Length: 437
View 1 (cartoon, rainbow, N blue to C red):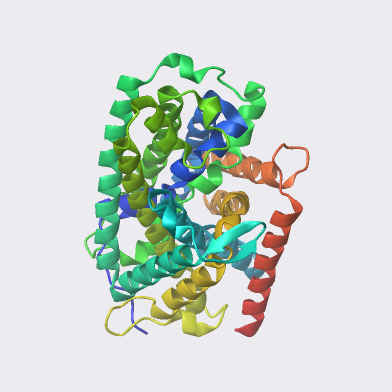
View 2 (view 1 turned 60 degrees about the horizontal axis):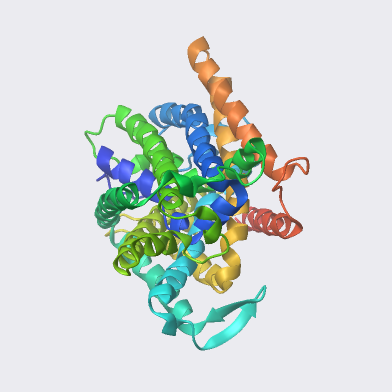
């Protein structure tokens, strides 16, 4: 059996992890973040969430050095738990990565329509009272096919694309922060919280797993490291991605709330762009933000495409789903069948249109937290050194809390019936594929 190409370095791993984490959510859902928590509630929610995830990142950094396997969480849990536990742990993480792909494909149409309103024409049908427009659907399908071809041709192509988009996003973000600092005012933060401080922070903490999912994508491509690559580079890339990703979200909320009164942004599409437009009374900042968001969307889409295709490939290679998914292209040394599978699934989910956006955030958060919990728990079992066990115990506590916040009715913002239905459909699909192997 052919092996995957080995071309990745530390900078590639950071770009993949950060890019998988940061997309266009800070533009498309800023009104939701401010509406659920207020500016300080959202800032503290992301900041606390980033700090709490450091022990989880530490565990992944240790695991990937010990076991560089594209199966990630499925491989880790297989070391200590029965096969059924290992299978569904990885299956949940596959959901967390895969579901972002149609999310970003929908988002590109939504973003483009903000710049070119004529794209909101030729309504085909409605899903949950949300219209699906033909031009936006074609744009999403086109982007999906572009990334599929990019990944099909080789990991080096995909990694180079990822580094360029990540660099542009960070450069434009620094410029955006400068504009906010010059034109904003502290009074725009008032009131700091939407409800009580505790509830406001909690409501943002619940969505942190979805928006911070990405640092653990590094193990999914660990087998594709450059031959002379030192395994400590995995750890550095993961920890840097957690810190930079959390800092990005904190500063994004702060920049928007500082530059314009946040209460006037609730319920507004593209609240980030509107805030800067109001502050400057000009259109060029909107164009700048739209460009930045487009690159962010591309890096997030590509990063999650890479991670989900590798995890699906690893499942096929282990023959726990139809083994064809584990095939490697003879020329390009890529998981070609898995890439085609993720492409087909993305296009199918893309048909749901805008109705997909917010519910996906909730389901993805729960799936990520569950995968983190399983990875930490399995490492705690195999690791005997006290210091590492203490850090791992913190990771177990954090990930289990993030998971329980989504499933227990006692917490505000818990799963709705629709989200439980979506979760059930994914579990059922996993059962079907496992039986079909």
